[in-house]
Picture 1: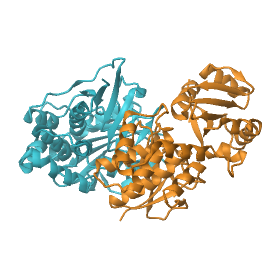
Picture 2: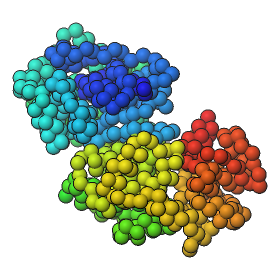
Picture 3: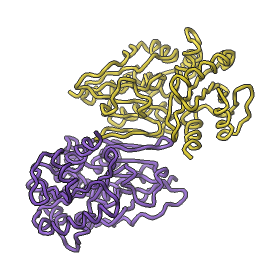
Picture 4: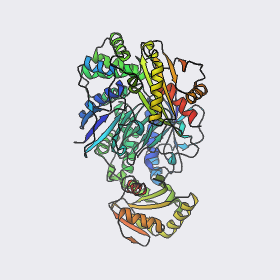
Length: 308
Length: 308
């Protein structure tokens, strides 16, 4: 039987953990010896969901065995894969992000412009007519609700809504209650240091000739983070120097009011942000109303400017 | 309605024309205003199939309208797209080749390690439960039979065989008779110049730092081509100089006896072929028993050596 290790990106978010667990079930059904793993510490939201649904946390990914290949879920760029991975061992990609893939042989690649990788995996279950347990349906719904911020993010598609409804015929979840609890868990700073705040949902990108880091913190309580702004900015500056970034940005996203405070750690970031987002800077931050999505509202805009 | 132009690679083979036509039907069913196009002159096999099935040849692709995006079928690398195309206009990829894709936003990408792009499109029809007409089923079968050399190529998977059987429940084709006629048409040199022989199924690749061209001619009558070897090699040398290639190779594939004569136009090609394929060179060619697939048996091996 083909052995495949399924893993999301470094600094895993909820969707990247959930899509790995669900893909394990899907590909076991398709005849693979599939094992979900995680590429780092998980956040409080993910912990809440797995505990609530009584699902075992995947183990941390380790070095591969000779006969194992890797399925990347919720990411595809080499800069986001776990540190020990030789990219040539990637046999499958299931994702909903922009593509930066180069392989020496044909692999399985399923990428769509859809709200979450969990949506795509739900779609693949339905396409293949594989029965979903109530728990798996609830799990996939959690992934969709998390990544689309309860269907409010601009990344949300009609398909996400339809899939969520179809899943809830099996899951029978009270979505309002569940989302409120989930977002409270996401916003909780229990056991979270300033370093954790910038690391937990952080991604790096190659934009033109530049290396750019963009962290984000989605919360229902932005004030709990903004009181730590000075410390966060110092930590970002240390990170920027340590990994030799050209730019680093940090988004504090208010998921209820649907806006973002973009933290700007230095003059370079301030100049670029003014050019790209045309907002006003007050006290090292730029307020961006309506902006909640790094993928759709921050990264393409920065990439376009830095690729000129 | 979303407008999408569907097009295969330059120097189109049968699979790249057929998968464009079938994808037009599939995506029209999915709510797109979809139009199949071709990126060059088609070969005698493709002409035979479309005539036999009474299907209209797609028009040559032209400059895009502002509101149109492009679906690449049967290819994904920038070096193989049609000349006028801005790669940023690509919204969809359906393919079965190695990946070299970089996008600024998430797009639809469906790639699998399967025998033909026609197989993948057949699979997508079945997944979505969209009814296939007898003609479309016959068309998709032709694409599978062509690209897998009647299921004999090493690129063939169990899934190709299953899809072919499932399609033939609708198509009701006498496969043996059809394949014989198809391969005769493929092998015919009617109206084919030496320049056509090298151009008709030719692809270029970036391998490490090198630009490499690999042409192939699949035939049931290799002697009809080998009598023109000297002229073919001269034409290859001219092509190599004209487009500044580092290496150029040409495969004459005997699809009945399942072997290949690899034409080697100069010392550089000879040295590389000896290193990679370890065969003996006689009179500017290397005999490679069992080798029929550029994708699986030539390109990865050359790429590996040239990337060192």
